[in-house]
Length: 276
Image 1 (cartoon, rainbow, N blue to C red):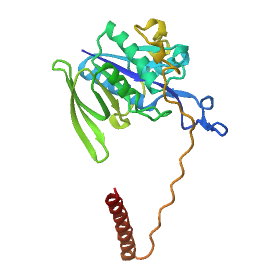
Image 2 (image 1 turned 120 degrees about the horizontal axis):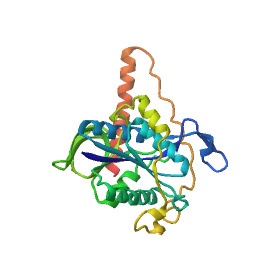
Image 3 (image 1 turned 90 degrees about the horizontal axis):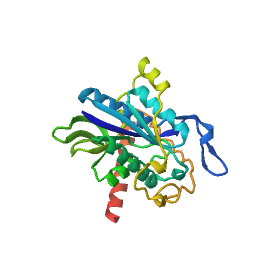
Image 4 (image 1 turned 180 degrees about the vertical axis):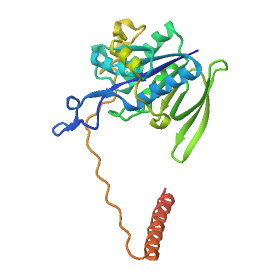
């Protein structure tokens, strides 16, 4: 029986969020809070593994009290239990401080019930760093398997997992010892509509809530703003890419022009390699 913990985050909906023109930062009050989409796929994969092998799915988040809504969404998807750490001491945390706080919560959960597998979304849509999952794995000294697009097997008895890890030009097959951590791509699954019993349970579900004082052996200098060596000084939209060249003329003329462009690109890259 597996015990899988999915680490999740409540984020502003970036399809709606606006930028503050004076500060060049995100105006988080301008958009509703949602479960990070990558994390929804992480929870869905955890639930599928539970159905496949048996076990329990827990979810863990760090955030302000309203983040309980994200946990309830995970209960809708099929998670069994939810944990939230919330405290003013966590405020202003970067990815380093966030991974530390979540690690301390995971250690407390593991004392109650050993953890076989941790699953995170590849990244959050409000930060796009992809650092928290590997940061947790590093602190727990377990293997991180990033960009997972398919879980082939999780064998608790023999202590290993096999996954497909996404690459730019394909994928690689990785076997890892358990316990380990997956950070998953959206393409790993599709999150279906939640069944009514799950929705009813989620509506009245109350997660386990811990403050910093409930965690063991915490170094408060590593939490929140004090424990965050990185600061986002400015955010700005990227420049829009220039439009492509529209090829005109006969088919032969278009092919000749395309070959000319490709040769120019080849010569450009060859020149860079020679200089390097």
